[in-house]
Amino acid sequence: MIRLIFFLFIAIEVKGQFIKIPYDSVSIYYRKSGYIVDSSYKINLHDLENKKRRTALLNEIIESEKLFNKYLNRESLNGLTSKKVIFFHRQYLSYFNTIGERIIEINLINPILKNQRDSSFLKDIEKRYLVGFGGFFDSNVITFMVNLDKRSCSIFKNDQ
Image (cartoon, rainbow, N blue to C red; front, top):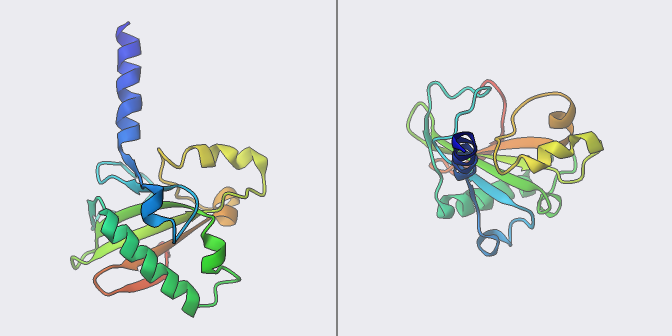
């Protein structure tokens, strides 16, 4: 009985680290699911040592989507357009950079998988921040960084 209670507690804690965004507040930007990564969520494979994690607010998510869409409309990104990414899932990771600016990373996750064995990744988007390289990540995940204070957007690179 104690083991069952412990398992239930862990499952609730993990779920609590991702906040599902209400569809009606973001439906003009995308049609799939969106999750805010809570600041308490631990990320092992991500360079966040010099950055203070935070939990993004809904109005900041909406602002980051506006900036992101303006960026997509200006830049040529191998056929990636705001009309195509409207059908991608989203994960939002937020932090302050080393000079105190508010950054939101937008993880875009393509729901149309080229390989069915990758379907487990889609099941995990509400409980695991998807970061990696090769295979699934090269084909299905692209990350953009939005600087809310500078009102700028760029494609994420590991050295930023």
